[in-house]
Length: 482
Ligand code: 5AD
Ligand code: SF4
Image 1 (tube, rainbow, N blue to C red):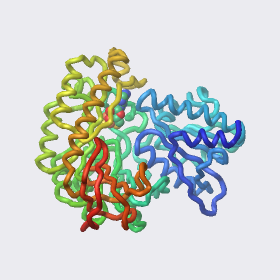
Image 2 (image 1 turned 180 degrees about the vertical axis):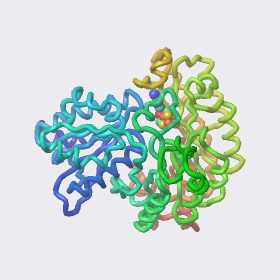
Image 3 (image 1 turned 135 degrees about the horizontal axis):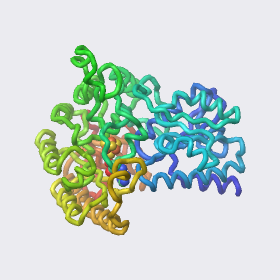
Image 4 (image 1 turned 90 degrees about the horizontal axis):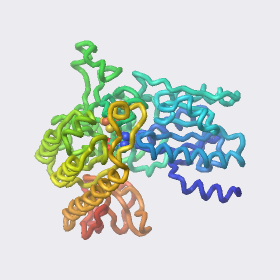
């Protein structure tokens, strides 16, 4: 295969790569699949390897080391990565010395089995073992395969300054927790990312200060479960009860952390991702309401509108409790946008359960959502305990129904902005038109408007004239007072 052809195919991959050069000489190609946590982890990996003499490159064909940060959340995500590995095989024919490593959730789930199943792989590294990469790469350079999938109780990479790959220079992600203790029965994350631990608030503030000094304007605090953030000097969330009285008294929870960030950086706009209903406190809602610079938007996965299914999923809340939380959000934070994750066809889901999901959506009218058909994951409680008994055809038809309904609701929500003025942070050029800026308002809705004399990173007031279900279209009226 010609190199041009390979480069062309490579461009079609969903890779997230970046070029960054300094005096280093080895070339690292790193790409990420799955959630924002993975994107952020790849930035941490790039930072660790920069100290080892690696520059990142966008050209797979010239890489000495290729790392793919993987996702296990659904079977389809794993299949995508396996296809990608087949493609690396082709590239290896023109770049025979290139080494291939897999990082992230699939590495943790499959461990050394990965080496047997995918011959192209030289290196398997789980999400808590990235500091060991320099040693593991040495092993690989010496001709041996290397594996480290040990999960940690403490690792938060708090002291590692991520190399900002693919950054627009305006908005950045800062991770605040790792792992998850919720043990939803369908979810592989607690097994692949380990127990929940929180990052030292001082290191979080330091990272945000560095971003501010580099002109960043928006920070998204990131975690599998941000509302469950709890710093008491380090260690697992589940061991908090064993902490000293002083540690307990001076502990920082998510409400305190948000308050701290918003006060310390009044010019930075803050978002947080992901919230979980069972961990969200009213304190957090009051802090969001109190600060202008905390965005009025909450991603609040629900998964199902049926209490019976929520119980099977071990979601730790009922339909009624979720709806009460939504009511509280609207009371405490006027104009707060909400988005959802919903899954169709979980084990034992009947048509009646599905209709409950539909009716919950109708009550909430989410601004948008991420919707999936249930995919059984090996090793999870659901895989062990329940039968995956909803036929794929029904999972898919229910999924299509909720996607169509969400589309209607999204349009209903965007229409509410028409005629209003919204504050937008400019993040870049619109994908569809060079002559338009693209940004988001506080509710996280995408806004496009003619460029005129504004620039990236400006906060601008935009009068909304029209909308689609996903985008607001308007015209800038002035700089905002941000
Ligand atoms: N099958 C389908 N969707 C899943 N999710 C998590 N696990 C699975 C699974 N086994 C979805 C949930 C979660 C989102 C990140 O991915 O909706 O909130
Ligand atoms: Fe998975 Fe549930 Fe944790 Fe989210 S809260 S990562 S769905 S176990």
